[in-house]
Amino acid sequence: MEHTMAAVAAAPIANRHWPEEGWTRVPFWVYTDEDLYQHELETFFYGPSWNYVALECEIPERGSYKRSWIGERQVVVVRGENDAIHVWENRCAHRGARVCWKNKGKEESFTCPYHQWNYALDGKLQGVPLKRGVLKKGGMPSDFDNSQHGLRPLSVHVEGGSIWASFSENPLPFAEYCGEDVIVNIRRQFPGKKLKLLGYNRQLIPGNWKLYFENLKDPYHATLLHSFLITFGLWRADTQSESIPGDSGHSVMVSRNVGRKKTDAAAEIARFKEALELHDLDTVTPRTEFEDGKVVAITHFPSVVIHQQANTFGMRHVIPKGTGSFELAWTFFGYEDDDDEMTRLRVRHANLYGPAGFVAMEDGEVLSESQLGAHHYGHRNAVVEMGGRDVEKQDHMVTEVLIRAFYKHYRKMMRI
Ligand SMILES: [Fe+2]
Image 1 (cartoon, helix red, strand yellow):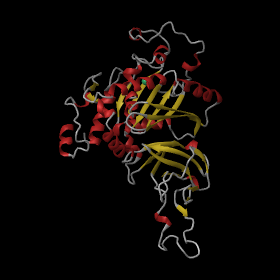
Image 2 (cartoon, protein in one colour; image 1 turned 90 degrees about the horizontal axis):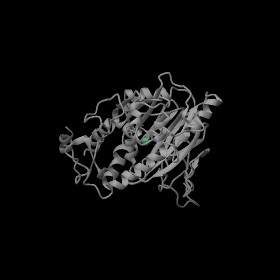
Image 3 (tube, helix red, strand yellow; image 1 turned 90 degrees about the vertical axis):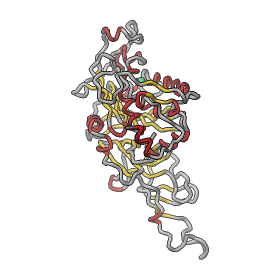
Image 4 (cartoon, protein in one colour; image 1 turned 30 degrees about the vertical axis):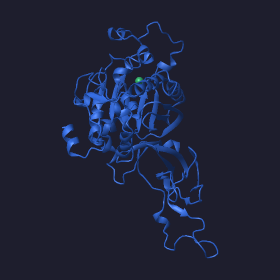
């Protein structure tokens, strides 16, 4: 079926052909091809997708703003009048210069540094210097209409304190874009309680941006690569789990904290380090928070991975920077009504993640390895057959089903 589709639609990447095996193979050129990358930006980030941009708690007051990214485009997220949240392109309507140069702050209005065109919090143009000219000379034509030259606004959706934006004027309703399994899990973590910002990490990973989504669609690696998770019982191959492919390229990966114990399954895994001890078990000792006992990682395509592990919550914003690099911007948060001990645990457990996290450090390293293995090997294919060749939900971790389901969606959207 995928082949038929590619045949009828004009293939945008005419010189590339997907391997005959279909979604059980990933050709390595998907990580290095420049034309493909430009088409990905247009198709996903600048298309009808909902993209994560910020948390409401980052812009608490009227005039508070955060600069953010959708693909390689900069946007600004602003709290305006009557608590309305606006997202607009950080790009002056006049000559395209960036209007906002800081990552965060608070302003009454925004003024472009080039010719001082001034914009209201909602992005509407409210002032053009020398609009009527000087000494009756120059200036804008008399019919120049400010209302036609504002900063380009994006569609905005707020879901339980998380802010999403779309370049489409008429995107699918957010819940529909997410699909049932994803929206249920987002609402589990964002039930409408006020959020509290706990901190940031940022890192540049020398790999293709899709590799990050694939990493979080790959429970198989988590049971093998991450000594810390395996040894201290935060994530193990023999725990009850689910791998749930979602709509629009999303997925949900569910596990459970099991505590430290050696089982037959764990003993098979080389990185289960029985002799490894921690003097302080705080980082691997979560307080029970969700009654369902689940640990959930949501890949929300194309912009973010949402994690809940131990007591840490994080948004991992994926910002592509060309074919071979992406920025990963981590935002750690909790709930405003957390007690002091819970806040302390959330911050402590954040040590698992970020550029030097006990767990995440290893992902940054292996993704750069995969990228190195893609360069000059466009004629080779990655094999993703673990857990079978289908794309249906599975109830175990020894699977690459989520990667297969992702490439099924990717090929349909990219017409490749
Ligand atoms: Fe990992």
